[in-house]
Length: 173
Ligand SMILES: CC(C)(COP(=O)(O)OP(=O)(O)OC[C@H]1O[C@@H](n2cnc3c(N)ncnc32)[C@H](O)[C@@H]1OP(=O)(O)O)[C@@H](O)C(=O)NCCC(=O)NCCS
Image 1 (cartoon, rainbow, N blue to C red):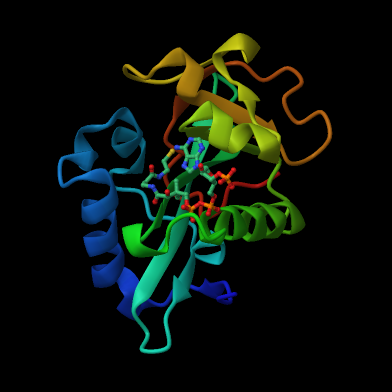
Image 2 (cartoon, rainbow, N blue to C red):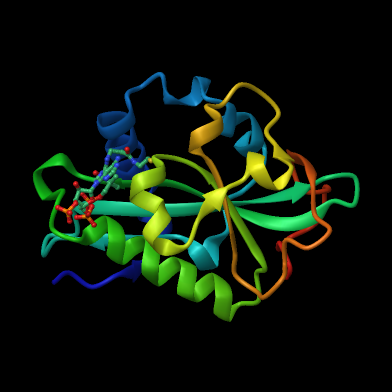
């Protein structure tokens, strides 16, 4: 099994290539990219899997977001990608498990994502629209998901997902 390692600045170009390969080069048209524009990803939650030569085989990143009028801090999982030649070996699940564990340990309370429900349900994600959350653009209702990393973190939280207020470095619990 390949170890899960912190992303390094030098990985960035390879990660872009991997994301173009797995999601297509038009990936930035998606609604989630509107929430990422101009906002740095959360470095403590950026992980990669590398081969012996340093080639990036898998990557996961998270972005800080804020929910509703109260601007409740949350994190947005993704993109997560594994090189097609290495898919189906557990790397994606390992990247997700490790990063969600780290996020919980760091005190983040809520995680959202847009992705395939059957893949994320086993981690504990549930429908976000059913819980009163909204995305600022079109996403398939079924694919919009949320998970509490801290007990009852969703209580009283509803409304539109947006970018975090400027100046906030970290999405706190
Ligand atoms: C999704 C992705 C990250 C999974 O990584 P991976 O290393 O192949 O996944 P794992 O080996 O940990 O898990 C494989 C299992 O997940 C299932 N799976 C993979 N993608 C799935 C999906 N989109 N929906 C449902 N199940 C999925 C596989 O069928 C397999 O099931 P099994 O263990 O019962 O055989 C990878 O396939 C990928 O990069 N895909 C292209 C980019 C992408 O779609 N990213 C996620 C956006 S939602």
